[in-house]
Figure 1 (spheres, rainbow over the protein chains, first blue to last red):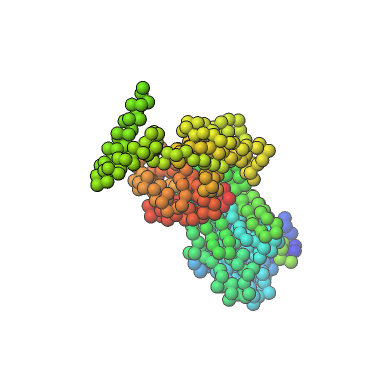
Figure 2 (cartoon, rainbow over the protein chains, first blue to last red):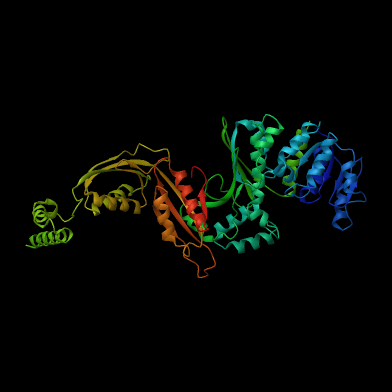
Length: 327
Length: 216
């Protein structure tokens, strides 16, 4: 599908990369909005101009985010920051688009991590479809691989799904330096946020695993009500982070040919995230901010895909792949 | 001759102990003790040599077989047979070795300990199978919460042996958590049970368990 009219909500790293790259994929951005301003043009927004205007502090344009949502588009790209609980305002944006029979591509994890059944219920009554490859593992095609294999034939998905935590653990193991030291380094490099809790406490990886687990149970659900019964949530997940992990723990693991990674596991029954021992040179021991997933499937056995789990362009590529699938 | 002296000493001690233990049956006990052949050996009860078997899996490296046999010799075991076929491999690429030996039961544990201390994997000892080995790292205030007590609880409840413990040098700063690596050997199919015991014990003491990912 090319020549798609995109309305992009959210102008952070992912939203602005989608706006930048859309033209290369043959699409037009007809609206680009952040939380307070928007640029809307049915003939295509000059995204470069809008983003540089935003960088200068003037906002994206004279329109409002509501104008962006009301404009005529084919696909809504929801790239506002992930929020928990009711997942607003992202969920509301998605609902509006589906009510108008438009497609939705999510980069925002909130709606599918917290309200998976609600999303599917709205989708049933809409001509629009919701895709969300970018919500799990950035550039890595995890959900589409699960769909290709057939979610009913996938037993488990596990992997390293948070680049910040992986950067910290792999640096600690390589340099034998303390957690706090590596975290400060990661913050200097822009790999970790000023408040890294979401990443180092395992919440981010857990949300991704909840999405995956819900995708797996969906394959067995008869209808939306059944799906609602089966879906899991962040509250039900067993989550342990890596905050304050002593470098000694990594050294002891290394003496044994092992290392520690923050591993998330999603099955139909449970979501579990925590520091785990993995073989030092094994598949899951990726280093730096790299992510990796292993998909355990009935007939294909184990598949592993590794790549960039975050970053504007990498995540935007997953968004634009989803747009391409909406034909 | 020194040997005679020793024997006499043993006999005397034996009688004395039994006297203390049971004065009522003094006459009988003394008679029994004199008849008891065990008193003429140096091992006391349980010292009759028996045949034991050990199944090992050795890495394919020079000196491994010697390392496995050394503890047998050191503990006075009498080697009966060694079945070692280099062509035979386990799925993990190790070489299965079966050792049959003769020694008093009390010595057998020391031999097993010696073999394990040499870093070798005992798969089975006298048909009691320790098929599964699992490694965990515990993190937290290990010393404050009593590491030996923690290990004891794991031993008692996990139906697993703690084959090896490595503790990181405790920091001068007591606020900092320390770490310990445990090798647990569980009977075949009991790894999950062993791990859940470790989890429960750790939970009680507010320790973090870094578990292996399945199949490690």
